[in-house]
Image (tube, rainbow, N blue to C red; front, side, top):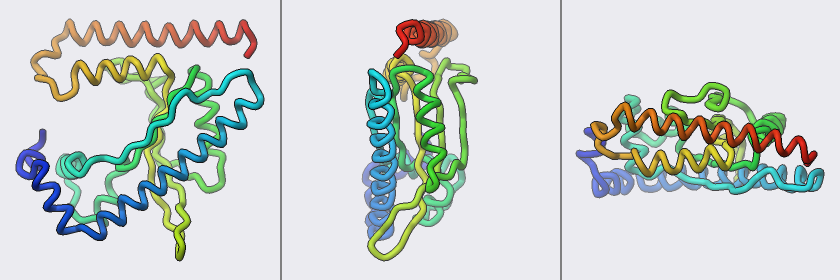
Length: 218
C-alpha cells in the first residue's frame, strides 16, 4: 500500500469523498454511463458477428469502477492532485471494461470493429499479446474516448478496454490470486519461472485452439 493509502485508509477515503461529494458522485455517474455505452457497443458487435458464424466471439463482459482507495493510491503514485478535475484528466483507467473472447483472432476483430466507430477515439494502445509483460501477462489494452449523451449536453469520457482470451483470463485471474498484495519476498525466481511457464502453456493452448478452429472452418 502507498503512504497515502495507509494514511487515509477506508475512512479517510470516505472523508475525502464526503468533502468532494457532489462532484465525485457526478464523475462516477459519468463513468458508469460511459461503461454502459461501451458495453452496448460490444454487445451489438457480438450479436452481429454471431449472426455470421456458428459461435459468438465474446464469452463474458465485465465492467468496473476503481474504488476510492484505488483512485487515491494511484493519484499519489502518479503525483496527481486530489481534485475531481485532476483525477478525471490524469487517471485513464477509472472506468474499465474487460472483454473475454473465445479465440485470439476474436480479440483483434472486436478491437478493430470498435475503433472503426465514428464516436470512438483511440488514445492509447498496449498490445501485451504481441509483446507479453515479463510476468507472462497477455492482453490487449485500449484507452478510448467516447461521448455520453446527457439530457442537456454531451460529455466525452475515457474508458480502459481490456480484451483477452479465456486462456489468458484464467492465467491472469490465478496469477492475481497467487501474488496480489502478497509479500514480495515470496515471489521468488522459481515462482516467477513457474508463472511464466504457465503463461507459455496458455499461449500454446490459444494457438492450438485457433488452428483447430481453422480446420473446422467456423
